[in-house]
Each structure stands twice: as structure tokens, then as C-alpha cells.
Image (cartoon, rainbow, N blue to C red; front, side, top):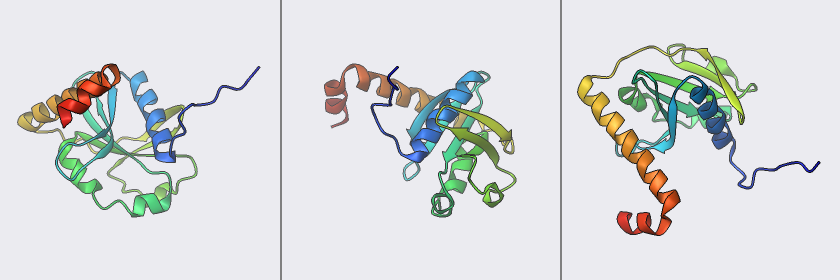
Length: 154
């Protein structure tokens, strides 16, 4: 039997994001990758839970990737919980204890530690959920009608 290969090679962080999205989907969450909650910020993965929870997950493929991340603390204002997603080889002792930890690979994920629960203010939650929905809808439209989306963004 021929081995099935992924037609689009992905970077290590993208493979982690895919596994995290699969793991969170099993928990009833839906996710969007590369979401911009505010100008100058772009999260690797934002998740919306079955009870309206908003989680942000930053995927780190190695120590250097984590150490180069200077913006992660700004993401805390845009979610109820913040998580790092790493693979089994990542030195997890580097990660702050108050943040969540997800162990992942390209095919799945498991939450190892829950991050601190800091509920969003109602007005911020409304803005975040609306932004999430609009971003997801634009992504879907882009798949269905790439030329139409390009002209809409131009």
C-alpha cells in the first residue's frame, strides 16, 4: 500500500497548530489559526469553547522560537486562558507556571496544565467573539471564492 503524504508541507509550528486544533475539537472547541485580535498582534490559534470560553494557544517548536516571542503577554488581554503548545522534546521548564501547557504533535494534543482563568470583560468578549466569527467566515469565503475575497480586501 502506498503511503499517503500531506500535499502541503508545513512548518513545525503549523503541525503543532493542526494537532492542537484536532485535540481542542475533541473537547468541543472550534479554532482559527493566525488570528489578529488587535493591530500588531497575531495569535497562532484562537479557540472558542462550547460555553463561550476564549482560549489562545501559542505554538512553539523549539527553545529559540519561545525565546524570540516578545508579544505573548499582550495576548493575555484577549482570552480567558492562555496556553503554550509544544512537542515532547520541548524544555517545558522554560514556560511560566501560570500559563497553560498543551503537549501536541501534528495529529493530536493533550492538555497537561490549565492556564490561569482570567475571564474577559463582557464588552471585550463580545468584540473577540465577533472578530473570531468574521475571521472564520472570511476564511470560508476565501476557500469558496478566492477572487471575490481578494477584490473585497483590496
